Image (cartoon, rainbow, N blue to C red; front, top):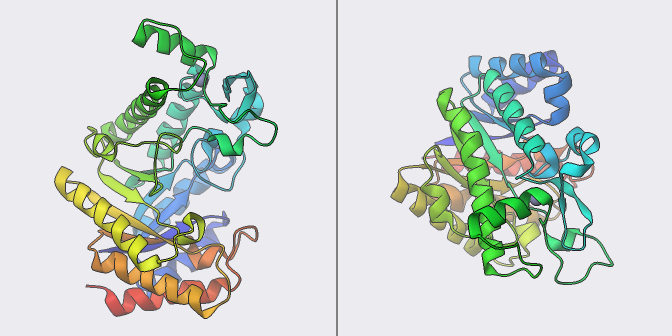
Length: 335
Ligand SMILES: [Zn+2]
């Protein structure tokens, strides 16, 4: 069984070695290295060294497209969007949004380049984290309620080719299906690059994934050619689910049973960010970790290392205590 965390914010290999040695002492065996556009542009060789140091210590290594094009999760900016403002997703009212269009040829090309670079780092797994279209509630104020993305020229052209009619102005089920089809096809193209290089692919979806938030049909995702691991992140602090035990248990059951059905590995993320310094918060961390282990997920990781201590915007109030709650629970419950 796999335990570990996402790792970010340190690009000095000497410091990274100390952290990795500590994680090893703490009983961890997996690590997700965030690989943003900035990392790829300025720290490529450094990142290769960081991944190698992790592998040398026996960690299973993952690399993820941290906020690349702002269509994946992550606390990072996108240079691509600054350089290619016309490749952004477009609402029906014609406004460009803060995420690249998955059907834009320039973005496709950029993501292929990122994927090839990520593969060259020598990781075990490419971790495709929360791929999504920009959801309407992020559009900001002053938008009509029924506004949606993406109706850029590339999406319109593709829709017309596939459906033999103009892309509707009002969002309907066909448009929603089209958006999901495009996301699946986009992932398929990128995952094939990893698979061809012998690198596994993990895809992480938010637990309440729907037509707005990504992929409704998880069976379809699990049935893809090059996927190896199904992952989800039941972050109770975001979803607002009162009963953490039930929420994490249901989510774990969903992912583990689907993964079993399709011969994949399963992964559950434990919320390690944005938590108050209250006894209940640590109870929740312990409960979620225990329930994911008892639910037989293959991999139970915390987002992120040390309770996100190094990212003040999302850090827990007492990040060390959050981290310790996770470590104590895996020590008590590891099979
Ligand atoms: Zn588009």
